[in-house]
Image (cartoon, rainbow, N blue to C red; front, side):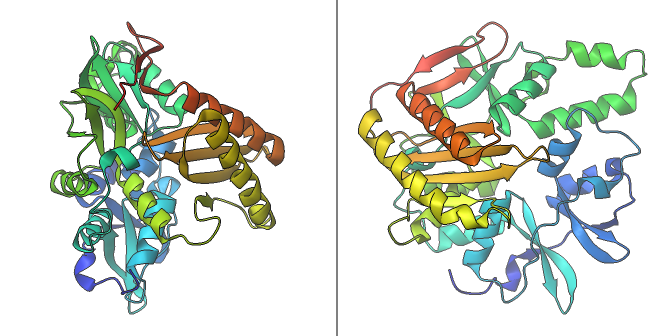
Length: 379
């Protein structure tokens, strides 16, 4: 974990000026996973599919400059350790990191290179998928509209939806699928027909059919091999043939980071604090430690770790996103927003308790099966 990133981990990419239209960059993003954006010859960030989805979901315009979508992620070098790179991939959620040598960016380190390193070092060889997966799986009916799917992604603050039809697994839908569909309509349809085509589009028409799956009893290494071999970032986890969760590359990195933690607060991982709020870190850890004790006592579970992301919006409201790893039952998550950090943390505690108490394998939102749930079967 402390060794420097080997140069064979570095792969080629394309470089664009920030003024180049985003529609001219899409093919390269799909080919390389991420492209480097420059501003006057200086590094300005990278563009990957997630960055496009977050800022351009359903609203890609021909004139939008690629610089609008660039994310200035950390640059790694030949002195950056593998452990530090894993930390970057987890905290930032990017597909690649720019690699600099000799004072200039010569390529990128892709996420799948880090996953191969995880396999070769046997970091998760004794871990089951059920320990690292996210549950419940947020699902949508195949007959639901694209606008419903976009709303569901925002409401539940997830990057993908499991698509079901008549109670069975049908596909998987990401923000990237919606972006590509919209961009295709923008380029091929007239202004008169575009709104109608967009309004009538069904989730089942644009989702990825027959997604890759993995059984909840499988090993984490098996999931990582599928990520690498199929160039994907998520798998639908099944129990007795039915979806019960989703496991992602970020879940894997999070599990590794938790294993690297030490001390009394090793179960707590806090990210996203601004410089102004950094002084509250220890206070937050203390409050979260008490929160974990309460949840363990009243919900009768064993919380293995809690990862909290703190985001402060321009309105000065706090958005708290928590992922909780349970000894049995994978990972659950919750998100709340409020203007006072202490009260928002209390709201998060109540929501987490409710989510754990009412734990389901699948939460379906959409057309026929709107707001239905599948109860967990006992292991």
